[in-house]
Length: 157
Image (cartoon, rainbow, N blue to C red; front, side, top):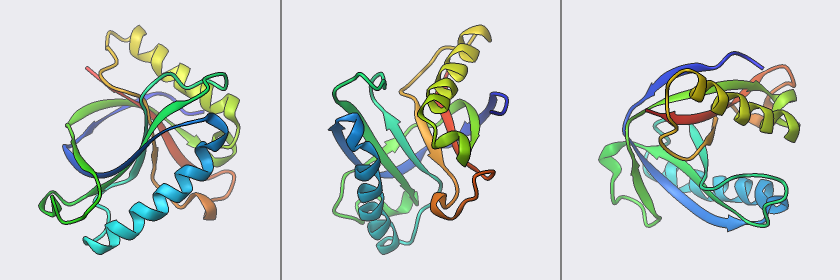
């Protein structure tokens, strides 16, 4: 796992699909939701930034249901162009760690990454400003195990 880094995220208009879902059902639902949103993003000119998935609650294997939101950024000029829910993601700073595919497919490594970022935020004088997220910046299915595929990120202030 790489070191924690910081970045600035601009305000984004995102198409969104949300569901409160049981942990074992997250992966298939994410794939389906991303497929539906991908079709809509193509209809409005494509994505303007990377996919991200927001976990609106504490994610653990023991949590019976988890509020999850898939977000597909589109151009700001596309507001109202699609008949799906959309919202504005405010500009913010993020603390994040980048994972390779071999790390991301291991739930223990993903949990460790969330913990690493949260601990870094507290140790470095920041506060968590919003729900944690996974940011997907490459085609996961085509990636090799050694390829970087996802950031584990927390908006901070």
